[in-house]
Image (cartoon, rainbow, N blue to C red; front, side, top):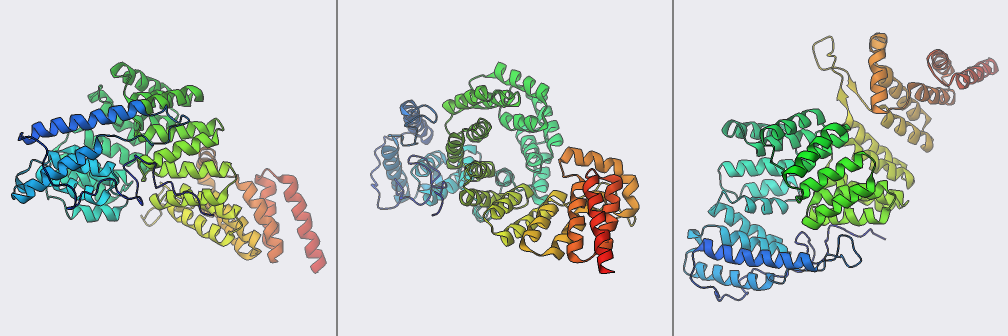
Length: 528
């Protein structure tokens, strides 16, 4: 049995694939132009107002957030008429050869309507035409970004875009949305900052790139400067609150919540900031209330769905968490946090097959995040697929390796560190496979990563202790003891005796170490 593919959204959502489009947008559609002769801006304002009125009625008819009938079934009833009318207007302009004299507004609206109708390819074509005609229509760029699911999609679309500064801004924005904190992205961002040195938008993109790279201190610093320079700017403030939440900075989070509430308490960003504040205080019911309020204001506000799922996990309401994460994926299939949250929820329900499916989706979006591969490896281990688990954990090792700050003697980078916890898990998996030699070698590697090379052991002891306490890594003594236990099975009793002796001096499991030393002596005497 395959898990339900949540990448296909509920009816009425404009993000889904795999369903027949509601509006074809093709040449077979009605071509009669029903609109009077108005300027393009006037016609756009009239039709866009009609579209917004339909969206408002749809929201009013929709059930409460996660209510019994809240299945995303309510649709904007104005869309079919708008689609037919715009198709006729655009067809008439094509017939008279006037398509190149358009201003981009109505092409943008037609693309939005096609997107709502799940006709993504046609929507992409009209949105690209809109940005060619009106490069400064940012709404068209944002809708185009929603259609991109990978860096390959981005590369393909960029080749079809006009060569101007807006395309460069779009490339940086999409790269950030796809979590591509690469040198090319930073270089393009730096180039834009020379043109717009005081742009709050570009500063926000840089902060979010640092956030995706888990450089929370630098991201927080940039957001704080933006808040000082633009105290009434609420865009992306929900991301700033996420950073402060991860850092545990309750005082600053409370301050940001006060500023946002004083500016506009009816913005979804404000509700998410306040919700994060209550979550940090472990008041999860109040946090959920504010996240629901954010979704009442904007059903497509991604952060609120994902954060509400996290809160339901904390409240042990797994089924509500699953539904929240599903709705987050409906809004944005690129959100790895929602996929990862679904994996966590199904893991809590002890449904490892489902959890593995969602963890794999998260890992595909974040291939260089060790946390994703560790989750995949854990699921494989629970399912008894130990070889696959080892491969996944080795991917986590590669993704999670880093260099110490201290450079080497030849002037190169510092010692490369592998996560001891992951090494230890791999060793235990090899032990379960009966490969004692590999298990012992990974235990040895675990000890080497914990203590460092022998010449630097004494110098680095205090810093290692601090690092262990911050990262929550297993104690070296535990790793060493289990390694000692492997050595007699591989026949290296002298090595086992040496490690057990070190453990008696430095470790916590002294009694176990002494018992192992007695066992080693008995084996030696028996062998003699």
